[in-house]
Image (tube, rainbow, N blue to C red; front, side):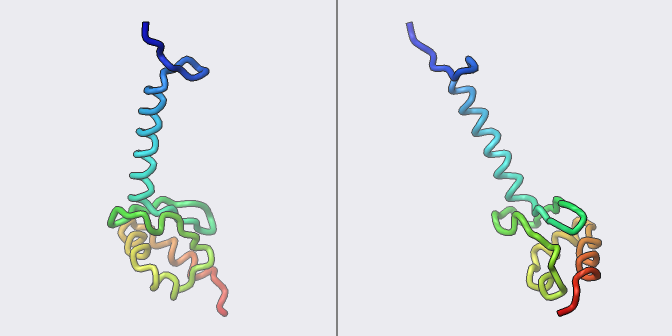
Length: 97
């Protein structure tokens, strides 16, 4: 008789492995397709134009006009997602240096 290896909860290891692969793949797709933007009033999901792993999390609380100009992909994604208020909010509240 073949023995089925199980975890403490009684679920087969294969079920747990397949579930882990599904969760991992879903998280990877989410990270590749969205920017997580931290603004002064919270977190926002902004859809990326191209799926890639760069600029997954961006803290814009200290951004000024130069920072927005340097982050062209983020600026285009924020504009395309109709969340321009994130840019104006940061530009208005950022003190001049």
